[in-house]
Image 1 (cartoon, rainbow, N blue to C red):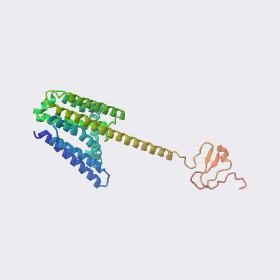
Image 2: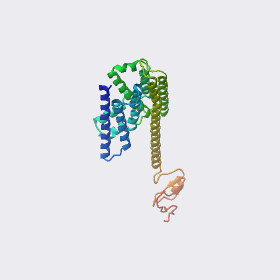
Image 3: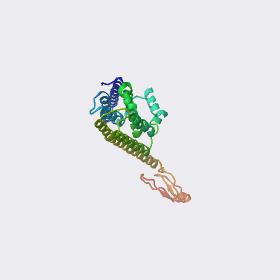
Image 4: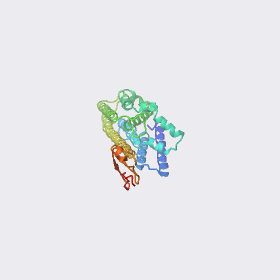
Length: 313
């Protein structure tokens, strides 16, 4: 059975988004700004993966083919999209104006912040897979092309949402802590692995896949999911390391600024010491009245002050 209208729409959107990303990156470089070409390749790989998974013909039996599509659409492509930081590119490529302000407002909105809450994103992603494979919903997609296309679209969007919530490389309203995101990633990976084991033991309700096809698909789901989750963990660690390095650099700049502005100016009196600028004449006994000694300012050539002059002078 060839691709339906929903699959064609998903593939077309993926191609348009990929073209827009590459165009924005080229425009950014054209005006002299730097943007890594590796991110172009990463995003393009994700877009081509979506096109292949929706229009192509993966290997294996019917269930194995479906699992391979799930791995590409719901795990591999979202991982590649997020690693390319598309929102950061859009904000850098767009000129200041209404469109850019609306993108920032959307990224900082309460609705987006709620969707990017890691436990909710994991529930939409992995919970949707459990609903699909452990109920008769999967069997219903066999004779309903539109439903099958909607399932593929949900896989892609839910996987993208989960990758965004865990990695949080782009601009978000509220950045969750490393412990929260790491714990959710481990829990989601465990739930995905358990689901694969249940499919190895028994098919989705209402289906009659061959045992060899079912076991091959379950193995692809189990080990392919592990690879994708390792990739998410790497992005999570890279994001944390980068953010920590920037925080240390900001603290270092603040400390340096405080030290630079905290030095006493010339002529400033310190407890027990009077600072005299070059060439300054101090009245007889002034140092003793101040209760300190005379010191020259640092970094200046010192010209001895006339101290202790007699009245006859």
